[in-house]
Length: 224
Figure 1 (cartoon, one colour):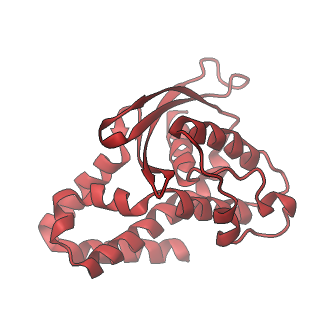
Figure 2 (cartoon, rainbow, N blue to C red):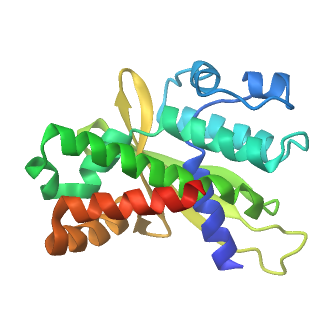
């Protein structure tokens, strides 16, 4: 049960944070959406909490739409993630002190490959949904004007004797007057911190070229 929940939590992250209710995706479910269509459907939210609340409602629409096949659902996930996660900031936080040592070209390449890795890895996980309930629990202001929105995922009460509750905190930051996700913490485990630990070990042993090659290989495998 818990492993399925954790896979679902990560899938929610990959959906990005954008209202899709009025997207062309739902006007013609037989047609796969374009990246521009998903991006253009976004309406900036006035608050970080308001954005997350919209996301939870729109995620439910995606997951319960019987007219979307697996491929369309995965593509929608990928497009929304591209449009609404701040991959530049996420990459910089993940690389930590190693970021400044990279040339602008290597920084750009890392962002690109890391973005592909996250999206490709999690886009297919929509099928793990089992009628879990998502809701916003609280929110708070952080340093640097960031905002944390605390949510929870409650297991299917119809099929689980003791539905499990997973706490998921989204950290958001404004960029170009829009709220963007820069980290997700699942039951106290930060996505940024988790990747940072892995990447620092790789950087210590093989440097940026080894890390980039690892990401390229993983992305190529996912694309097959």
